[in-house]
Each structure stands twice: as structure tokens, then as C-alpha cells.
Length: 260
Image (tube, rainbow, N blue to C red; front, side):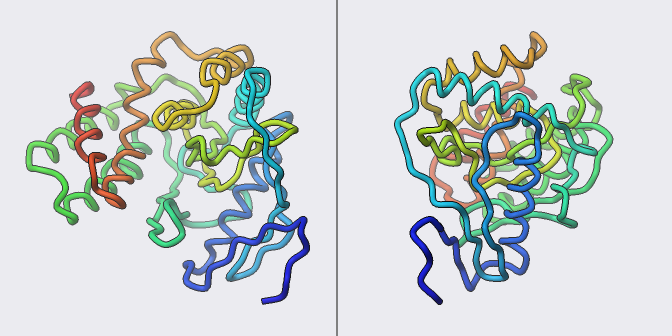
């Protein structure tokens, strides 16, 4: 592999699934295409076994940067998507989620409602993987299936149109630079805007109050959105349970009990 210029950061893997780097590049381009949206790391080149990105410099975020990022993230979401479950422009089929060494499939099929999408393409596939791994008891299975039933019935739908979401927005996927927060490592798709916000809250985010303040200043959410945060957090916790075990399955079950 040839030496790369200092301004280039190369993500490479010869063991990555076919299309993995093209999937990430498509997601980055789609997010970057949102008018006035959050900054996105620039893709310089993509091949079967690597992705070349601009090399970022880093800075400690301050409240003003966090507030500006929150407002920009709202504009990214506002750019919308064709449907819940739709892939980013330039990509067909399912995507990927998780660390490069343990990638899981990310189903991407257009759905008419968020509840149907979240039940069929997020919770139930992860429940099946968790059952295969032996991390859930029979009562846990019944609990998640009950929530999936409620989701399919539309009990948690708020009528919001599909948003253009990052899809894996824990704080480590925001690179704080001198010019502000920059999105990296997406699992971009058409989803619910509250999913990105819930994941940021789940794993912690610098100056969270300013991020959400900036967001709400740009796009108001309905009054019930805080009651849905834990619902959106179920999927990332279930993913972590399958990948890492530890306390994640227990945390997922504890949150799920709020919606039984």
C-alpha cells in the first residue's frame, strides 16, 4: 500500500464485507448534501478495501460549538428521506452497523410508518440474534415481542416524516474540530430524527444541553418526545448486547419494561 499524504486519513481493511466502504462513502455524501446541515468529513477516494477521508484536526468543544452543531443536525434531519428504512442515495440493499471487525447487517427496506420499520428492521432482528446468543430469557423475549406489536400498531408514531439521519450517532462519531462538530462513520438511512438524539443521550455527549437547545431552536419536537427517548435507545443497546454482552442486555430489558 502506497504512503498517503499527511492530509489524508485512510480507513482500510482487507476483511471488510464487499461494499462496506462504498456504503460508508454513500452515507457521508448523502448527509453532506443536506442544505445547511452538519458538516461531514470529506470523502477523497473509495475502493474495495479502503476509504480515504480528509484528515481532521481536533479541538475541545465549547457550548457555542455544541449549540451550532445541534442546529445544523436539525437541518440535516430536515433534508428528509424517501421513506423510513430507505438507504442513502447511491446505495442499494442493506447496510452495515458495528465495528469493522464485527459488522452486523443493517436492514434497509422502505416502510410506510416508523413503528413498522423499527419493529421489523431493528428490534426483532436484534432480538433474534440475541436469542441465538443466549442473552435473553423467555420473559425478555415476550417483552420485546409485545413492544414490537405495539410499534406495528402505530402506538408510538408521531406523524413525523422520515428524516435524513446519521444512524450511529454516539459522541465518538462527532469529530470536534476548530470549525465545529463534523460527522464521521455513519450508518445513514431514512429514519426518525429522535433516533440520533436518543443515541447521543445514551452514551453521553459534550455540552448535551447546548446541543439539544440548538436543535430545538431550529426544529421543535412534540411534547411527548422525552417519553420516547428510551424506546429509541433499545436498538443500540440490543446491538451492544449481541456484540459485547456485559450489562447491555440487562439495560435493554430495563428500558423495554417502560413500554410493555
